[in-house]
Image (tube, rainbow, N blue to C red; front, top):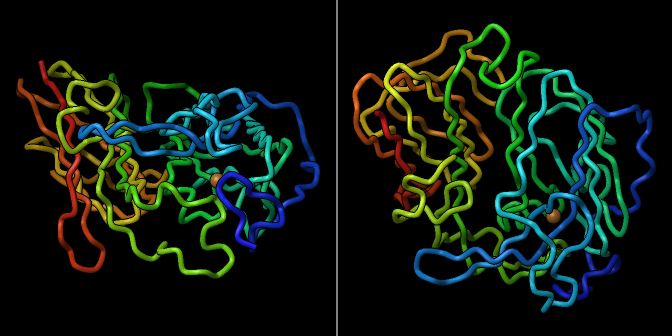
Length: 333
Ligand SMILES: [Cu+2]
């Protein structure tokens, strides 16, 4: 019953639950996102190799990957397009899946009703149609969204994007009553095991051992760019340029499975929030350790001109060995 990558099919997967009912209690949305699926997103690494990623496309509709040779016509990106709205707004995420390979959208850290939580296995998975997730963020901060079908594989394949909730006063303030900022940087750090990236979407769901307990990353990315060399240097909005006296907000998302340690290259940052919640007492640090899906909002107020290298080590969760490092920079003028 193992559905192949090209074929998929309702009967080819185990432990996924298709057949979403109509969303109960729909009201008019303030903000609407129309997402499609793209399972052929080539990501070229610094060594010239290309790794196939999956992701959500902006605008819904069709995708590559139906027949195995589709050619990436789906318009998806890695990471998936960012969502950004204000606290208290009613949001609809319309997920359109034009095939029988199921996916969901889980808005991680948001607390909607069950029918809009998008957790496959627990609710249902969207296939061959459109489902509307209705939700309303209650607290400003940094979140992310991801597919929650066969999650270990689909998240590794890149099916996630940033989700930024601004306070009612809008961008420029982290949360109501919280700090302001002048410039933003987005650090979404992930490791990739390219050997996983040819697996079919159902891999492992029927109980077979396909190696999803064995992640041996060979690439390390920051916000969709190979971060092991210089590709993420001077590249906004990963890199940022700030004037002395300005405040830089770095929104850091640990999107990998192995723990990470992010080092600020001689700068001191102040953590104001974590996982979309303000800290009672902001903490000044020169590095942060984070686990999978953690987010930190860090504000820098640099006083000395120069270039500061921001390095994130991806650390094996058992051995403690550094598996790889991503690099970007902050320029202070
Ligand atoms: Cu998925």
